[in-house]
Length: 521
Image (cartoon, rainbow, N blue to C red; front, top):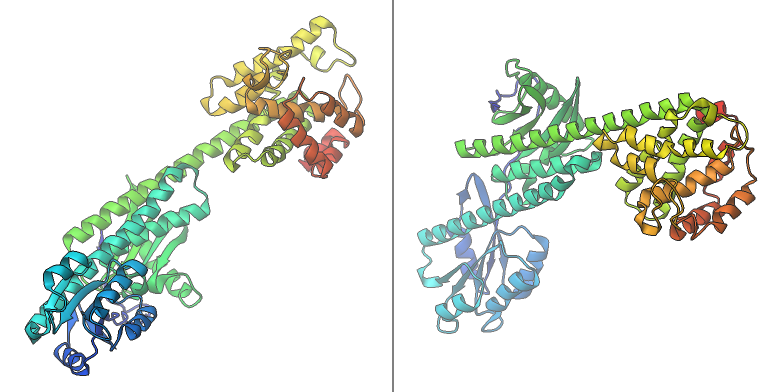
């Protein structure tokens, strides 16, 4: 991976880099001359190219008002003795405890050190410096403010990195089950980390640096995250798209085009020889070699995350294709079973939701249910399609379809849940089912769930060996088999769905001809 430094703007007209936001310094002192002298002594002060903005308060009440209006104050110079002998110390406690602000640098200045001795104040209050007003010459004031700002900047960078990293870590456990919204959050976290590395302090100062994370899907470029002047918005969409097109040319190996701001960085998101996307950053200040190395490392992590995400969803697609393929095998064997499969999937989905299962389980169970009768491909047509009731020996042959389904699916670990359904959906709550005669909760939950919907749909459907039951008869059969054939909780939840009319469309489908059912599904 390489980091490309862009050339000055000539191709696309863009605004100049915004003027850096000033550092905010709060001076709290009831002596107007002290406040005025502080302002004079710090005139023209700059730190890292950013000027200083002084905010003045003559009392604790005025200071609290300014704190409300300016939550990004970097440093406060606070007098101790004002409206009371300990007014300044109470303000310190207010900032640290009530506001929970641990980043602002607090410097105590006092003209009466006997009232608030240095050792006592340092030991008992969370301050960062203690100064006698008489010793704060122009040079010492400069040094004090500069060191305080440096500490504030570093703490902000740490906090922003922590926030960005926490967002990435929060999403990482779900990286293999990401949906679009979580993927965007992942990239936003990556961008926050990159901005932190570039020494951006507070989120309110986003305008001091702009950035985007983009991914490449074939020939399409998708903007996944943006910050500062490149955050999403009607006024930025055109510029974002222009930058995306220019960056795409860079990562494809073309010469760096004119049109990007001076000082911008284009960081490809690359795994091996494949470029998945790129990060574009505009920094308000030059980046050190170590900064660039950190950016590169984080970009590598981002690329690896995206590669894992794509690989996982490719495997998911393969799983779904396998389900569809095997489902079609069953449909070719028996067209009535094919329509039945589609309904069973939807019955299972709705019942799983009603039972309060998490979305991933709902999806897994509904897909697995499609293969509950896959074993019937191993049953001879003379038995499978026999009109009328099966003889006892024929019944035993038919019952083998659950074990045949187990055998078909056992070589595919990704179909483990479908295998359980295929083998166990004819087990009964009272232990008289087949093939293993398991009882109660010894039968896997998903198989107990599919058992209810499978029996109901079979009852209301026309089969070679029987006509369709009336709906009321089928519902009564489900109700009468609670606690013997069916898990009570699952069966009662199914009946509640029926009574609320939430299964009416599926029931209507069962009454249609098989060809129409497949088209509807």
